[in-house]
Image (spheres, rainbow, N blue to C red):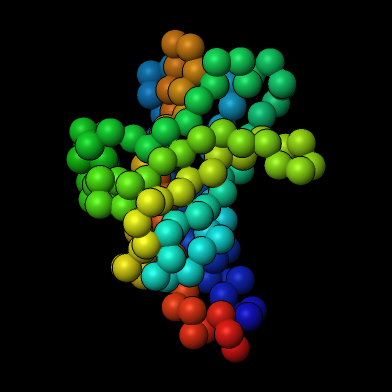
Amino acid sequence: MRAKAWWNSLVFGSALWACTAATTAVAAGLGPMTVRSLLGQPLIADIELVIRDKRDLEGLSARIASVDAHRKANIPYSVAALGLKAAIQTGNDGRRFIRVESVQPVTEPAVKLLVELVSPGAQASREYNALFEPPELQRR
């Protein structure tokens, strides 16, 4: 289990360096992603939403980036095949996060995606690498 935690920290920590922003900055930010599903299941992942002030939430939305944005970032566009969607949600503790879900089950052990955070007049995007464990490893 420690190897899994170390690997996830390495992968998601390195994703922090893959953050890109548009010409104007969004007051909120995209933090690390936690994958909650296993290989062979539909994707369920939560992305930390970094907010300094609750007023930053006004007009804020999240989405999976377009085909063109994926192409410009050299990221394969798997949104169509998986039916990916992203939405801002509120947890039981009141904190906001972005839930990324797919309609179709994930059949590859790793999926790259580009998530965009949009507010009036501003946009930021970040690349994420979702890694999936086979169900057999989870049972151990």
